[in-house]
Amino acid sequence: MFVVVGVTGGIAAYKTVHLVRALVTNGHEVHVVPTADSLRFVGTTTWEAVSRNPVTTSVHDDVSRVRHVALGTSADLVVIAPATANTLAKMAAGIADDLLGVTLLATTAPVVVAPAMHTAMWEHAATQANIATLRSRGVHVVDPADGPLTGGDSGPGRMREPEEIVAAALAVAAGHPSDLAGRRIAVSTGGTREPIDPVRFLGNRSSGRQGAELAVAAAARGAEVTLVAAHVDEGVLTAASRHPRIAVVRVGTTAELQAAMTDAAATADVVAMVAAVADFRVAEVSHHKLRKEDGAPRLDLVPNPDILAGLVAARRPGQIVIGFAAETAADDTELLERGRRKRERKGVDLLAVNRVDWEHGFEATENRVLLLDAAGAVVAEAAGSKRAVADAIWDAVAVVR
Ligand code: C5P
Image: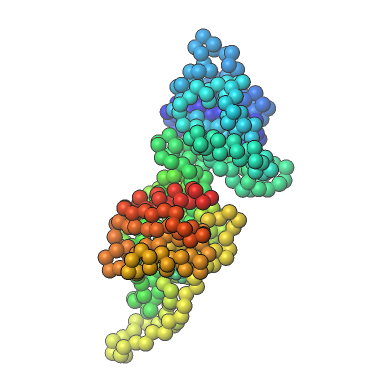
């Protein structure tokens, strides 16, 4: 692929050296277009060495081959990293007073920007309005991360790591939506198993398919996913475990699932509790196999913690928490009524409600969910394959954030 990498004047430009190297290593033809100001941070020699191509900054170089237009029209993908507030403003206004500006106007290729700036500048109404304008024109924004900034401050504004930007940009070029690029997502799936004795357990019919599809769909849209999987059906985790941006963590009991999800949620932007969690566990697990000769056993059950409630209580600022509710209901009215009450009780940002009975919901490959937002309104109704339902859920997340 012919990739134009625009570099603008921020200290994060040093990280873009790794980004260019990664693209070249992956076999792409990379042309770096630095702005004049960015050359104070990283010079032409470095860009020529890592990209293995000549670097020009002026519209007046190589005029006979109309290089300023040629770069834009040849590009299959344009990545701007770091993108300063100034460059974003110029892009929004269509200003073309240097080679990068001209290239951007001449191209019809997908454009991915990775902003980097001080938090106050990122949060300024002007920058946010420019970002909104660029998004509305189809520019893909790899949202900056929250973390330490140059000068000792901390907050949103840090450029994402080169490998995250490369993954997002390649996903965009492959035609996938990348609206979750750079997002960290924790998903739980499957059914927990509570031991009775060394060979028996209390379990449920969850196949884990919907949660696995959510993980794969999120990763395809650019997210970094931790998939905490309790018991799942054969083959359900195959695609997820092969995906480079999904880390699968296997668990058995509710307590293990709680520990793994609490851990993953600590750095996640979105948390989805899809797992069918056992509400009760056996009070005293027998350490030897219960024997028939001893008569029918009496099992004393104690409640398990509500993991979702704990995650909601520990929610980080800006974090979105999604719950699932599988309900038996006579019709949609009853289903929605139960869903709304549950949303209220759980305090989640989104609740995916689905009707289950002996045939529907669990184990099936198809699903139908109603998505309730924090106000109890139905924001989406999704039916079809569990992958289609997963994408509908991520579409809704993209809107609420
Ligand atoms: O209350 P109910 O079990 O129907 O709520 C379902 C939602 O709560 C699901 O998102 C499920 O993963 C979560 N849950 C939980 N901990 C429990 C029970 C359910 O996190 N002990």
